[in-house]
Length: 381
Length: 129
View 1 (cartoon, rainbow over the protein chains, first blue to last red):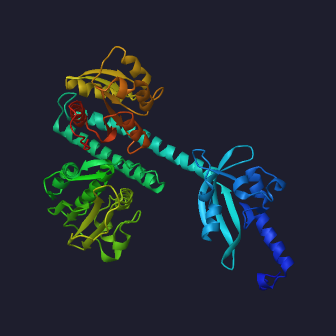
View 2: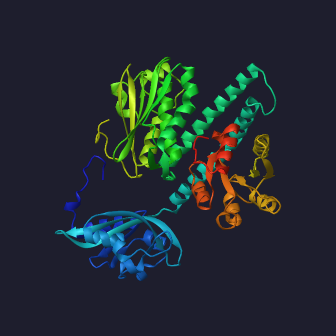
View 3: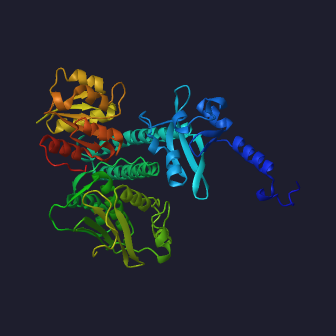
């Protein structure tokens, strides 16, 4: 058919032509495809499905789908009939997409991604079509990615640990007295190692968040103490720019059921950002407010603010506002993207108020019990 | 002052921890993997074990499984000292009885000495290392 000529609409094909077209579609798709009648008996199966499951067409046609095609959980337990996607597709009349494991004829199991669609006629299911594909390679890639994260974490940091430890030992006098210029040089080495360490942490955490591998270890955390530690760690950076860094809290123990290390990363990033983008002589304040169901954290700065037109993109990867790029060149555009990912992983909420040239306030809420926080604005800020 | 077993495969770091801890008047025995640590424990009774996780021959988790901290040595504190931040291995180490975990590349020598003192005195976990 010449390319300019319109294709024949399916509706205008006669029944035989439609049957041949459907047959060709069914047999030629690269994924496994199985059709059943309204009772779940297999009426048609394509060559890919036969190859993936190791059966012959004769063994499959007429067999009851849930019995013939054994679906199992990762631990090897069979998936109950009521939980099988094909059952749910029949019961709900909706398409079900899921990952599971199928047992092949030879007993071997394969991870599969399946889509089951009911065939509806006058609102009633008269059959179903399941399309599935072998996702062994995807699983293997995920596993390799996780292994790489662990390896990179360890291997990149081991030499860094030695550089930092020995630099500190020299600075702290473990190896005898050193001169003032030597001390200054060592502090530069420590500072560079810290920056490298932060970058490794950020990249690893982002990789974990993106691959769904964040390990959240919930414990009761005294968040006022944690905030004090965050401020203490940033006091040097603040004093270098003559910035007043303060903490506003009740002074009493405020406990949140959360992951201390991950949340410290959140507060640390927000405070570090506030210091970085506040001009010399400015103010940065970390606040904690104990509310009924959650705890509200705020990081207020008197910095350059976020332009209105950039505010929607502030949590996106590699994003840096134009006014920031002009004045400060050392950022990666990953900090707030990471912070948002971590707050999400901890079940919290994050938002901000900002006015260009006046400053920014970032707010984070964490539920006291570790559950998802109330929406922003539920209580007076 | 305490008896401390340092289990760390990196020779430079192992040596650094020995210098730091001995300067705080602790008695230090060094091992470079879990198997060496188990051997050292035949003749050395530590108050605290500073334990790396990823090591050749026998890693930290396997060491903890063999050592059976909870049942056999409830008085010994295990301080995990690793660079595997927020990893499932750290969660597993806590399950096997580790008292706390700190990240090597974030920990300055004086903080290490302080965290060890806190752990030995059973003080509240201080995450700022």
